[in-house]
Amino acid sequence: MIKTEFITRDEHAYSIETEKLDVLSTDGRRTILSNHMAIMMPLLMGVVETEYNGKLDHYVIDDGVIFFEKNEASILSDRAVRCEEIDTEKAKAHIEKARKIISESDDEDDIYNAKMSLKWNECLLKARERYSTKR
Image (cartoon, rainbow, N blue to C red; front, side, top):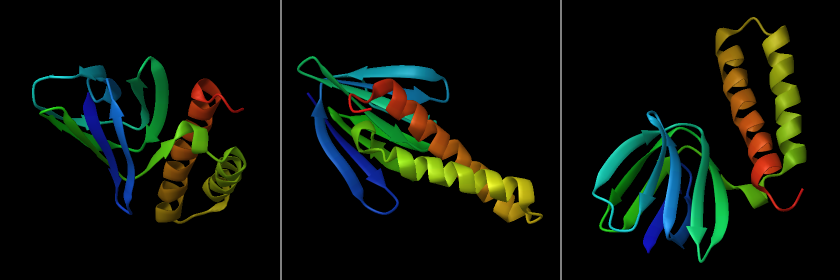
């Protein structure tokens, strides 16, 4: 069993136990099972898949890092959301707002922030569509 903590810049988001972690690292998808060697690796924005008693669960994270040692994993990321908790209407509204800023603004910082918001919210919608049982 792997004790896993999702820790964001704002809070301790989730604490779960899992038999498997499947993460998107900078080198591709990686699976961590119990008794894996100690590892630290950077993560990309995407879905972390967990499995407990044959049941899969999915979490969307922003770029981050995972620390794993002695069957304890810490996933540090700016943001983490369980797929079942994604608010699709809110994500769609953020996408619309970001696209408007990108097309209308002359401020490079505003455009950059809007592009990051667009990327995050599109990732949320794709994850919700693919992995959520509530659609």
